[in-house]
Length: 546
Image (cartoon, rainbow, N blue to C red; front, side, top):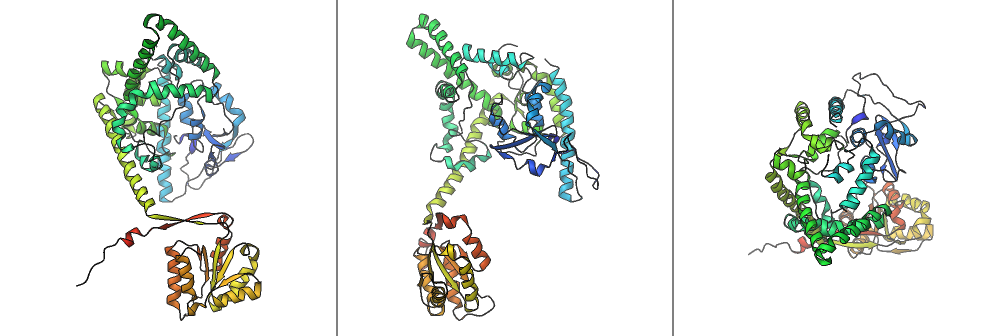
């Protein structure tokens, strides 16, 4: 999500420049950043804006399009596509316009943003040079991985074809878009996911990881793989799966028997799953998992999201060269056996721009998995308990579509209130009205609307309304007060408004606020009013005096 082409920064504070296409269409970043929904997605590649809302057959899936909606996707685009000119042909019919360049004023915060953009642009230029060197470093083993990353053949067609054959017929290890966040919560954002509290005891996830990791492939992925081909109607994948199982049971059953073949397959998946979970998560779970930050360049984002495992003969073999995960993230189409060659250059780039480069021993990384899961689970549990305690101390009151509205006005404001009621008569007649004595009579006489009348305010009418609020019999209070005249029952007025606040009643003390309430969409629908249960008040300690 780097800034990439997000700003062609100018140092002239006075001049304004605009880059236009042949049609003269330019689009500001303010406009681009509005298009972030799944049904309205724009993004930018090389200062050109594309509308990818209806691109439903994107080879990389919909998740990446959703992620970069409203952002600059230039660096990600270049990282994941080897034949750029060929891929750009598919973007032509999605083209909307060019990005409008912005000028920078003299404000300090804007100057800071300018400096940040200039640094990102320099970093982008240096990284592009590094990418060119990486592409010049043009395997067997881990074939499904390398075919999937288009890093074996020079043409993506052959990579995709052999990817399907290898993982479908040789290995049956498809990679459906599985999601396991309902099983684990990771990163500092875990505390925002307290809504999953009833599903799993995440405060113990560091312990059940030892059970879940071995069962990930033989149970969860196995089920999700089969479900995936039917839900997504991947009939080609289904054909490969059927061929795989025919081959498996035809060959192994002759030697082992049917039940032993099932046991063999389960144990093989058990071992593979354990190994995969520990190796994969040693680079990812242990790093910062934060919310989307569109101001991070591609390089900074990758260095923040992953780390490396120390290079050694054993580590390289055990991880399949994926101990160089930083380089793998930066250059996803680069063959794994060449990743170590580019590592010194990546380190130099990080040192130049003061970017933290994390590399650790394998055992330290494995221990960090446990510690990271424990930390995330603890953050979640603290937030969940806070929410649970808050919910336990709340009462819910439903306000129906037909509201019970109390109308009150001081003497100098009664005419204004009557005029307001006249203007809104058609709305108010759909609800149940009540009022203090004099105001209620005026509503009946002038407007002919039915109204429940209580005593005049100074004679206890305000207190009667306050009691009705406390009993849950009033939904809205319209109290047009006279702030310039002293009132003999001022203490009653304050008590009424205090109770409206305590019981979370929508209250208007002037006509503008009353207009906002009356035009709210909640006036024609139900609404749930949340009120404190006052348990702390009821259970407060009373100091006894001797």
